[in-house]
Length: 117
Image (cartoon, rainbow, N blue to C red; front, side, top):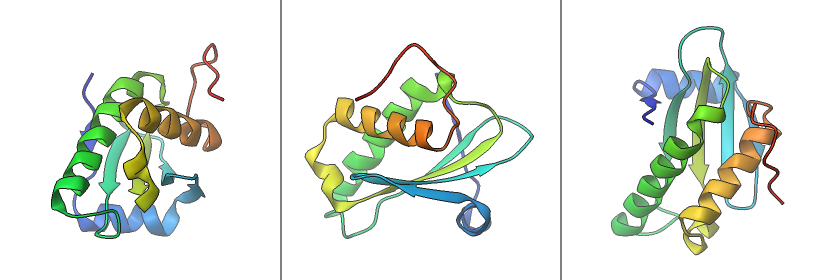
């Protein structure tokens, strides 16, 4: 399943300014709930996370986790996922679990049968 990306810098700034922020151990998620269109995503992986190779790996893992989980996310959200330096300790399964926890914390997860510890 594919997902849509956020537009440019103005759309990121709008999400940061008007969205709700929740932080986990490995990622911070900012969600702006809107009434229209599909959920759109942006990723932020700063130099604090690591060198270029590591940052790109984390971004690829974020994209893959979002592709897997997107079917269970309510429509009409603008979501920015921000990597913390500790995220490099996780593999794809760990990142997927962490993002799912953040979805549930923001109340944008509508799949009820799976609980993440």
